[in-house]
View 1 (cartoon, helix red, strand yellow):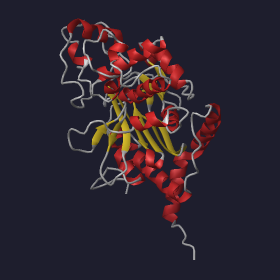
View 2 (cartoon, helix red, strand yellow; view 1 turned 135 degrees about the vertical axis):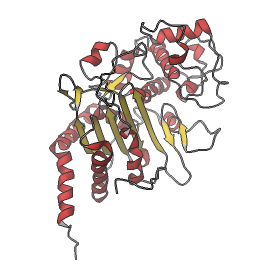
View 3 (cartoon, helix red, strand yellow; view 1 turned 90 degrees about the vertical axis):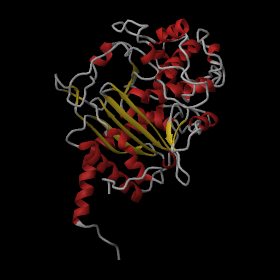
View 4 (cartoon, rainbow, N blue to C red; view 1 turned 30 degrees about the horizontal axis):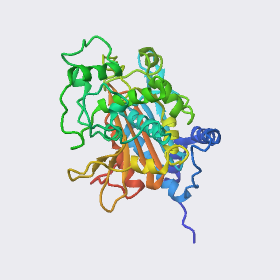
Amino acid sequence: MKRLLSPALITFFLVVLSGCGEAVKSRNKLYDSLTRKQQGLIPDFPKPDLNKLKKEQRYAFRFYKRVLGEDRFNGQYLVAKNGKILYYKVQGYANYREKRKLSLHTPLHVASVSKVATALCVLRLVDQKRIKLDADIRRYLPEIPYPGVTVRMLLNHRSGIPYYGYFTYGHWELGKKLHNRDVLLLLKEHKFPLNFRTDAKFAYCNTNFALLALIIEKVTKKEFPKAMREWIFEPLHMDDTFILSSEMDAMSLSLSYNSRMVDQGFDYLDAVYGDKNMYTTAHDLLKMDMATYSDAFLSDSLRKQMYKGYSYEHEGVNNYGLGMRMKEMKGKKPFFFHTGWWHGNTACYASMRSDTICVIALSNVYTQSVYNIGMLAAKYGNYPYEYDENPLD
C-alpha cells in the first residue's frame, strides 16, 4: 500500500515550492535557452532524481529561512543541481537610502570570489598556450624583483610576495587610488622582502591575483576588464557581470553596507582588480560553475590541476588549488568553495562537484551567515563538514 504524505508535509512542500515558484521555472527556461547559445561551453547534465531533488530543495529552503534569515538577508541566494535551480531568493536593497531594491540582474561585489574567475581566465590562456603555468613570472612581468616565482605559485598562494595593503603604508599617498601597475612598480622600487621562501608554504595574499591580472593584460594586450569580458563573461553569457572600472559603476548598481546599514564607501585600495572587484549575480556565477565541467571551456588536464590541493606542509582539512579553496578529509568527498569579504560585501560560492551541486550566497550588507554553506554540504553528500547541531534538520 502506498504511504500518503501527511497534511503537514504537504503544506511544507507547498511553502517550499511557492518560495521557488514560477520565477525559478522561468529562470530554468532562460538557462535552457542560454545554454543553447553557449556553443558547447556548458555540458548537458543528466536529469536529477526526483525524490532526491525534493530533499535537496527542502534543505535549500531551510538554509535560507533558518541560517541566512528570511527577515534580515540582503542579497541573492541560489542552489542548483545539474544546472537546474532548486531554490532562489533575492531580497533587500541595492541602495538603502533611495530604497532601490535588488533584482535578479543587480550585480553585487563578490570580493575574493573574483579570484575563481581570474584563475579561470589564466587557465584558459594556458590552454591556448599564451601563458605557461610553470614559467617564471618575470617572463611576463620583468619588473618583478623575485626570481623563481611561477604563475602556478601566484594561483595557489605560495609565492611569498607580501600584501599590497600592508607595504603601501609609508610608500603611497593614501588619498590617491592605487592601481595594479602601481603595485608592480612599488615592488620593483622598494624590493620588499618576501614573507617566506618561495614555495615553502601557503599564505593567502591578494597581491598574487593583482599580479595575475597584469599578466592577463600583458598576454592579451587588453585591459583586464576587457580581457575578462572576452575570455569569460561573453562566452558564458554572463551578461550582468563586469570588472569595476570606476566608482560610478558601483554607485549606480549596488552599494556596500556594514551590519548597521551604514554605507562603507570607497578607499584607496578599491581600484585594484584580479583579487576582487568583480560585480556579478548568483545566476551568472551558476553559469560559470556549469562551464567548469566542460572540456570545451577548460581542458580536463587543467581542470584536474585547478581542483587539487598544493599545500600539505601542515596536517588539516583546509587546502587551496588554483584559485579555489577546498576541504579534504580521508573517506570524504572534497568540498570546493571560495569565500569573499570586502567592506560590507560578503560572498560564498560552493561547488560540490561529486554531486554537481552549486550553492551561491551573496550579500552587500556585512553578514557571516553566507559562510555557513557547509551546513548544506553536510546534507548534500559525504563532504568534510560536521555539525553537532544542524539547523537544517
